[in-house]
Structures are given as structure tokens and as C-alpha cells.
Image (cartoon, rainbow, N blue to C red; front, side, top):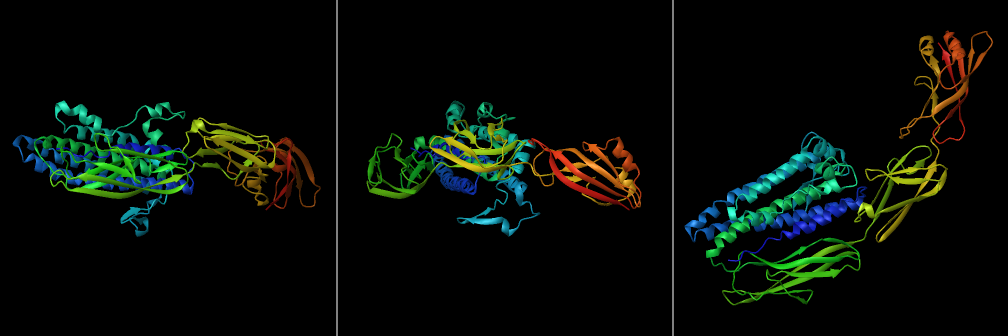
Length: 527
């Protein structure tokens, strides 16, 4: 008999979409919605594969009854389904760990953790923007390398059911594979496949990757079962009696200007080598199927939004001679490329420090993105990890980061400001009351950049220290730098209850300053 082929190409097509989406490292809410849409599409495709796979074991067992020598192929069914179930359970457990590690670890299962997706319950990704959990578990703790090893082990389990002279044939049909070369070609320095695939990836962006692995598993199960079905079907006549129109698109989300492409074919629960007279049409246009009964349909995306197309397949039942037509409607979504620009610290650039910036263009390779800057006498340069660094020299409200990529341009305006004034302190105090012992233990005035996120510091240029003891004349001394000089140390050593110390005209310089800035005065009473 002729067993219909499972749409393994679907996995390859969807994988392209996932890899394209993962280029959007600085993910906005809209992009996360796109990730969720891709993941839901993969989950739906996996469900269809699973439903199709459930039909094959009974067909194989029925075919094996025709001849005693064929029973060996029916005996191998459990090895295939067990490998599929085990691999799927492993992926689900790994995903559960990542979800909990990224923000759902509230000490137990809470009803609020789950939402409905269609008719199914799905755990809510509260930490979908969190990349610490994925990096820690998949890269630092080695679960990514374990995943790679496990997937290759499951691949070998599926291949092991083939006869020795059919190993190469089944091996080529098994889609489970790990690309060990791509990460080596990355411009970013990655430690290995796991770091390349999961390092610093938001949780929401990794969900389609795991669904893709499950798609590989279900497609591998389909390939192995189809192999067994073909083996028992060589001496069996089976009639086509259940039909379904199938569309296997290369991508379900395309960019405006790109072509939408899909394979349209008839899926049946059983097949026949007799002439079925299959004809295929899409949107009323006749399509010529190939030797496998597959017709290729394509159309250019000219506008954004949901696009629908209707497919009809006419087939003659080889047993009853009855001609039947089967119709289905499909859809895909057309979007436009977009650019996201954001300052990693805040929506402002500071003079005198390196300002980190992340830039990405969804659907465009990083080496095709061109970045420049105007205003603030600034420069922007790309770091080895794919992020950018901005250095500015002049205050302005109109510094712009400009991005261009194939099919798009964008820019964003930033303010440029000096580093804020630090607060002069002794120990952790801006002034007030100190005991003689605590006051004498200080080494000088230090500038504290309170609530400033950048790793930088300012330096005290100098100040005037004045001691005023009760019923005594003031004793002043000019101090250069933040640390006490000898004269200042002598004044501090005299501290007794009732004395007052004034630190006047405190000046400092911060990175990017042309001249010193005035920090005012502080004073302390010795109790």
C-alpha cells in the first residue's frame, strides 16, 4: 500500500520563523505576542501530528496479520511510541523548570498560574522577559548540553527500529538534529551550542524552541511509524476512505513584500497504489500535484493583516469509483519589519560614562543593521556581544540614534546630561551630630553618587575646614583633595563635645567635567 507521508517539512518551515523571531533580542510586548503566536501555532501543529500518529499503530498491526514474517514490524511499535512519550515528557519537565525559575516559583501550584489557550490549560509566563533563569539553568547548570545529548539519544532510538539495510533511509527521514556548526560562526563569543541557543534569551523567546523540539519528536515518531507501515503494507491492499486537505506552509507569518508559500496535499488514514485521479485547486486556481500528490501554492504579501485562502481537492475512491471533493480554508498573517531602540539604563545619555544601548531589527540579521548617532558630540560603537556603547560630550535634548536595515529606517531621540551632583559625606552622613571618637575616625570628605546606576565615581577637589570651639576663635584650614591633609588632621584631632566643624566651599570633579563643580557646605556638632 501507499502510506501518506507526514508533513515533516512543516518543522523545517516553522524553524525558519522561530530563528527569525529570535533575532529580536530587545523584545517589545508586540514581539512577545508574536513569539506566543508562533508557539501556539507549533502547539497546534504538534497536536495534529499526534492525532495522525495515533492512527498508524492499528494500521500496522492490521497489516502485519496478513503474513507471519511481518509481525516483527508490529512488535517495534512500542519502541517508537515509548521513545516519543519519554522525549515529550522530558521536554515538558524542562519547560516547567524554566517557567518556575523565571518567576512562577511561588511555592506551589496556584490557579492564577494557569490560563486557557483554546480548550487547553497553559501555565502563564509571568517571567517571560526574564533571561536569568534560562541562562542559569540551560547554560550555567548544563541543562542545555543535557538537552542536546538527550535529543541525539532519542534520535538513535527512532533509527534503531529500522532493518540494518534501511538505517540510512530512516536516518535521513528523522528531523531531530543539533547544528554544531552555526554557533561557531556567530560574531558573538559563545561557549557552545547551549550558550548560543539559550544564553541571555528571554523565557518567552525560548518557548517556540522547545515546541520545535517537540515537533521534531512527533515528526520523528511519524517517520518511524510510516517506515513500519510501509514494511507491512507491501503485501496488503488498503482502501483510501478518510481524507483531509492539509496545508503545510513554510511560514505562517511573513513580512510585507515576501512570498507566502505552502504545500497543499491530501492526507488519508490509508492509501492505495491505484489511480485516484487527484486534482488540486487553491482559490479556484488549478494546481498541478507532483508524483506524491503535493501541489505548491504561493502568493505575494502586498498588505498587512490576516490572509485567507481556500483549497479544494477532488479524488476518486479506487474501490467505489465515487468521486469526492474535500475543501478547507486556511489563513496566515502578514506583518511588517520593525525596529526597537532602547537605552539599557534609562531614557537619557550621561556625559563621561559608557552608555549601554541594545538595538535590534525584527526579521533582519544583525550584520545587516547599520547604526549611527547625531547630536551631543556623541559616538556609538558595537560591542562584541552585539550590544552598543554610546559616548557623549555635550548636553543636548536632541541626540539621535539612527538605525537602517533592508526595508526600514528608524531613529530615537535622547537627552544628554551631565552626571548629577554627588552628595558630600563623612562616613554615611551629610552632616549632623557625631561623637568625638566617630568624628576622629574619618579620613576626609567623599562624594556619593546617590541612586546613580552607572559604575563611575567623582573626586573631591578641595574644601575649607573650620573648627569652632566654645568661647574660642574659629580655626580654619584649606584642604586640597578629599582626604585630610596634616593641618586638617590636627584640627580633627582636637574634637571635643561642644565643638562645631564646618566643611565649606566643597568642590569636586566628575567624569566629563571641564572644571570643578560646587557641592556646597556640610557641618557637624560634636556631642
